[in-house]
Image (cartoon, rainbow, N blue to C red; front, side, top):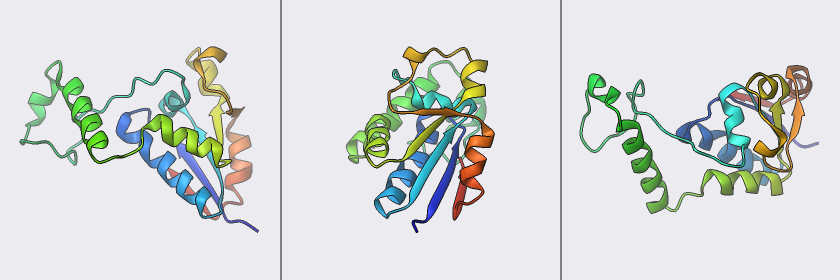
Length: 154
């Protein structure tokens, strides 16, 4: 019987989008049965048109080329710059994009579950979402997570 990995993805940022997809695709490659439950802002990771950003504000662990005091991080345009830097670094290092990792997960039979309550709450439409996902509520996910060998919240 395969091990089970349950992941809750609640962050819809560029830096928050990588961990669930990397861990899920790796676990699937190792033979795990994997399900990711996308809730609240994490639901953004299942939209067709991704416009993910990264913010240095409130993220003291983010490495910057020069130290940037917190008060400076509120300046308009700094989020754009941080996002540009992160995308550039990912590309330079040959890291797969969120779109590529998402597709790998789908091809590896990772079940991507969109939280129905969040979908309704934020007025998403069917055309907003990628193909191949399922919809469900907390009970749907918890039924799987209750038997999982590993459960992660991101």
